[in-house]
Image (cartoon, rainbow over all chains, first blue to last red; front, top):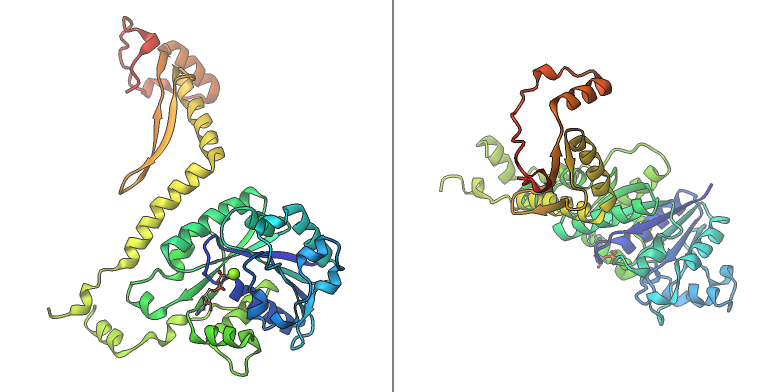
Length: 265
Length: 117
Ligand SMILES: Nc1ncnc2c1ncn2[C@@H]1O[C@H](COP(=O)(O)OP(=O)(O)O)[C@@H](O)[C@H]1O
Ligand SMILES: [Mg+2]
């Protein structure tokens, strides 16, 4: 049974594309076949994060127009057996596709792959409706900030109204030292507000930016990093494994906070 | 200041309390189905005791700095008689109405436009 999962958030810039690329790579590394669909028409960048931009020939629009077969449009990742990308058109806008068409493509891909991950554009208009049209599950990406959490709540409501009830949360860009100082909401705070189960926690990390510079998902890097571990764990949880959440606060015992404890601050 | 770090202003508490309010409001205004269902249920309960003008009633959600509140404005057409109530309640769930304090109803009041507040 293949699973069609949309990665969405409402707000832009919270880490949907970063999550889609790393999760896709992590699942492929665990020997799953994965098709990634870039549903961000006009602003595609999943190909860039995966380092596949030079090999894009056809896009989803060409498939829909009958100018190529679906299999021809899929870009295979040479580093990972089982990972393919269906690129979005860059020269068209979000109105170029309709929900039924996206559904058709995703359903066709579901015949050949274990996972279909759909990278959703920001917003809640047609681009969003396209991206969720075929989804059976949703991963909500948010950050511990007011606007992102509010938008996440809105999107969860819309998904539920569409009958997508298998929803879980990824809290991205957590800054442990700010959480420690009560200057940022904790993961628990966000969970309490949104009321959906947690699937993963990813800290802010410069390595995320370095990896995008290289066009190489973190989980393919030579060295283990905290965000790479976080994405690997999310992939495992999707697979049904029980993996404890990373303790991002573990390294926060600096001198100041120890002093605080001593003085009861 | 002896312990300057004790003085941090907990901006996360601001974030959380503001979000609680705004999310409550978003959810309520977006999901009119929930509001509709709640309205029907409240009306069913109220209608056991008084006759409500269903055309004129108003349900609304509002929020100020501190809380989101539900305001119901239910113009009452007629208040039921004690005996009627007693019969109804006993039929429904065998409640003992003796325990309910009876308030004298002013029968001369214009029951059609009885004030709702
Ligand atoms: N955990 C993280 N740590 C550091 N930077 C991040 C992290 N997650 C995302 N970013 C950065 O944030 C920006 C937006 O991420 P992106 O995945 O493109 O968001 P979206 O697809 O939701 O618009 C990118 O520059 C990305 O490198
Ligand atoms: Mg994106």
